[in-house]
Image (tube, rainbow, N blue to C red):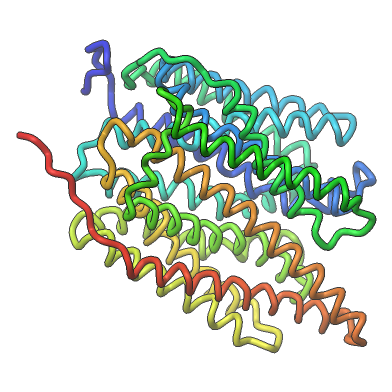
Length: 469
């Protein structure tokens, strides 16, 4: 039994289990929809460019909500925050389940994203706060197991559910589980964070919308019929808004997001590394099922199940890597992970011919396994590089940057795949060869990105704060 900030006893294990259960379920929603895209396109009579906003829009809204989490944790009881995000997600899921049209479905998806965007930094901040530094690697390994595994198994669960139910059944499953977690949270979640009432800087919140504008314009690249003068105006305004947000944080007495954490070089490296590993993971979970279906010609169910070995490997390694980092140091662990990721993408970039399903499954497992050695250990190392009063802001910076880089990575992968495929097809290639060439261009691009990630890992320094007796 532990005590919260009001000296009330609470069961720490049940607290963590309830917290991670909600996080796991909401994490699955990020990647689970890709398998259902064809069904949704047919049901709502919409093109692929429209249906992908269920994922892209979700990520964009998450990016805006993440930096607000430190302010919420300082000004609201954590139990209230957790129940709020669960209810947002549950109501959003209900709207999607009942949606008669695609715009209504997007509205429900936006409510889900608000909840997930607040929760992702918050649950990591809380875990770091209630865990002694020497045990953080192990606890954050469990957190990595939840986040990484959920992202990887999303398409798997979606494939299984869609084999027996309609697309609405997928959201019914989410809704039932989250409702159960709300009931559990009423009993097991406590307000463990100290409160310090501050004023919410609305100008900073408004400026955060600039991230949506930037990613929106990036998403327009390669599309037909784009009003580029308007797009350039949106991009310029968005860049100015983000720039003003950054400058403003350094001049506010109580910033929405304390960017002084970026003055710690080791923390900066940790931010970039968790982003690099997240890009590798999310691109695998979204691009590989497309390869399985479009190149290898397998069904959506098989493409989802093909991700199972990688998800299992990731799940097994996450708790191990956390404990390993506590013992041999975070730099060594993250170097191992980045080498695994680079080897995986490197082999893919050398494959000019169609790969077998087994080979792709093994490479996906290698890349996902590498993620277990990097993503959450990088979060923990970043937190250990900061004083305790800045951990909440540091974690919010890491999760926001990771989400922005992940969103950008998915957009870039999708753009390269579409444009390269179209370019090779216009050069006279068959559709099959053009598609294969498009995927090869994606593999080369992300191999180069992960090589940069490996170089960043080489610059890391193991950091241990001195703890007073």
